[in-house]
Amino acid sequence: MRTALIIGASRGIGREFARQYRADGWRVIATARKEEDLADLTAIGCEALALDVTSAAECAAIAARLEGERLDVAIQGAGVLGQRSQGLEAPTEEIFDTVMHTNVLAAMRLLPAIGPLVANAGGRLAVISSRMGSIGLRNDSSSWLYRASKAALNSVLADAALELGPRGAVCVAFHPGWVRTEMGGAGADLPVEQSVSGMRATLAALTAKDNGSFLNYDGKQLTW
Ligand SMILES: NC(=O)c1ccc[n+]([C@@H]2O[C@H](COP(=O)([O-])OP(=O)(O)OC[C@H]3O[C@@H](n4cnc5c(N)ncnc54)[C@H](OP(=O)(O)O)[C@@H]3O)[C@@H](O)[C@H]2O)c1
Image 1 (tube, helix red, strand yellow):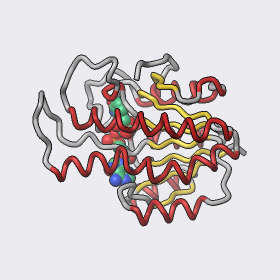
Image 2 (image 1 turned 180 degrees about the vertical axis):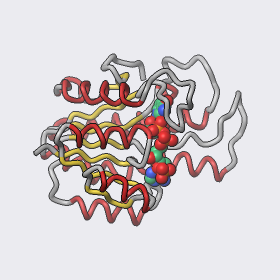
Image 3 (image 1 turned 45 degrees about the vertical axis):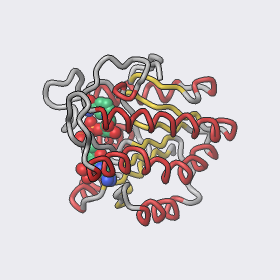
Image 4 (image 1 turned 45 degrees about the horizontal axis):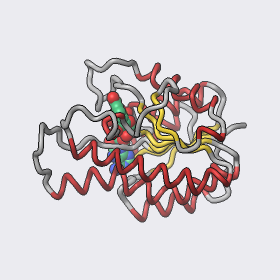
């Protein structure tokens, strides 16, 4: 049975990944930080593990718990927008730390542990980034802290791809589209089901030459 690890599966895009992979017959290991969300994930057939991605101790505990697993798919989707801003508005240190720790440092702690488990299975590793992190496509400076965090996450993914690609993993950064979740809001373009089914189809079709790509949910290449 194929195994997927979904980090940040309490709601939104992460939960939909867990739901769809389960519905497709996969074994799903899914993380959340609240008891009620862990219970919900268990109820839909996932192996639910507690993880606040900003906790170094909890990231280390997850790494130990997963040792020996072979992951066909691993998704790091936990993320925060932080403070919405317009133009060059300095963030507080507290908000800077929350956004950078959640969106960047967590991946730098988790990918070294999870990546080899994906490589051993010849699997696919994805981070849920954002087109807002693209420097080449940049035409708007709103929420610049979030943009900076996703640009940094893209850099982390590029390095992970260099390390893990030769060992058998295919590593990509996704823009999931503008998706109707708590973060995306009710006015967003896409239902979460469509975004996630698109990313799952894209993941399933990846080959070694796609390692280190920045992809739209439907598989189109994006400029870094
Ligand atoms: N929606 C969009 O249009 C859109 C567009 C581009 C990129 N993205 C990216 O897609 C990813 C998922 O977003 P979404 O739209 O599904 O947003 P969402 O509904 O707000 O969900 C965010 C998820 O991240 C988790 N999370 C946040 N901080 C965490 C922490 N410290 N530890 C563990 N989990 C944490 C949340 O868990 P809790 O329930 O415990 O808070 C929740 O599961 C994010 O990385 C986001 O930046 C979304």
